Amino acid sequence: MSRFWKIVLLVIAVLVVGLIGLRVLGGGKNKAGGPAAAAEAGKDGGRDSAPVPVTVVDAARQDVPVYASALGTVSAMNTVTVSPQVGGQLISLNFKEGQEVKQGDVLAQIDPRTAQASYDEAAAAKRQNQALLATARSNYARSNSPEYRQYVAKTDLDTQRNQVAQYESTVAANEASMRAAQVQLQYTKVTAPISGIAGIRAVDAGNVVSAGTALVTLTQVHPIHIVFNLPERQLPDVRQAQQAGPVTIAALDRNDAHVLTDGGKLDVVDNQISSDSGTFRARALFDNTDNTLWPGQFVNVRMQLRTISGGVVIPTQAVMRGPDGEYVYVVQADNTVAMQTVKSGVEVGDSHVQITEGLKGGERVVSEGQFRLKPGSKVTALKPGETPAAPTEAELKAAAQQQGPGGRRGGGPR
Image (cartoon, rainbow, N blue to C red):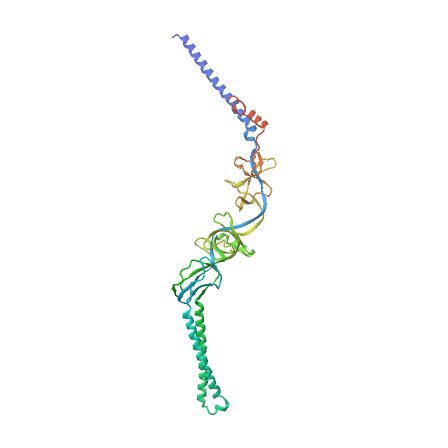
């Protein structure tokens, strides 16, 4: 190949490389000035600047009760195991298991014949000694009369007087024996020492029982106790509430679904704190007239310690948590949101919380949809349960124009 053709091929190669470079540089500029510029231009007028529909509620002011809650155990105020005080054959049981009995009701009957015989024997001995006493008194009175005293030796007179005293003591002993026999006779009727619910009987009629044999257990359920434990940090609040007046307590079911009874009062606070668990025991007293509470039952106890007057309350879901603590989104007058740091206090029911710092009553806060927000975002305020309105035709056309040909915002070529 001649030198001329070599120069021609070199020139052609340089031209080709130059054209390719120009094409590459031109395409980069086209990209930079096309979709990128369109995206930047559409940022302000597109989706990022459109108002975000959110649920907005007003921070309400209301009296907020402060509670202490714990798991409690229902316990009977009194539990008595009924046993006979004398032995013998059990003739009858005069109650039904599960029956509510009154104090003094006859629950069982022991064969009374042995006790009755002892009483009759003591009564007969008393009558015998009363007759001897009467004779001794007559003899002493006759011997001590003025007309006979000179004929009776002083020794005989002293003997008759002592004999009277002896028979008087014997009659007194007989009376004591009669009272003892009468008590034993009364014990053959086993009565209820308290009012309560009779449990399952421990022995059947016809058996021979001895003193102390358990017949049945009575449990007093009117009134009734609930015993529960609270952490030691709540002891000052509990004692302060006691000093302010009666402390009301409600008993709820295990799921806190509904209140079983709310007429309880704090009865007593234990005199020491457990070093093992760091808790102290307390006991509540309930009338339990409708038998809602039953001994051994587990319930949730809710004790009202005090009331915060005019507390600021918002839905719990409105409170967000970030690296710097809790915050809420507050809707301002121009329908933009601002991030507000807050501090939550006690829970109010199942869905609200009291705010102690950072929020005033009447301020509007976002309760739903706040995850799509950032400070300064425009919002469309909706009431709880309200849904955003459907877009109008004009809004749909404006959105379509913003999207441009091919569904791309800004309409720039790619």
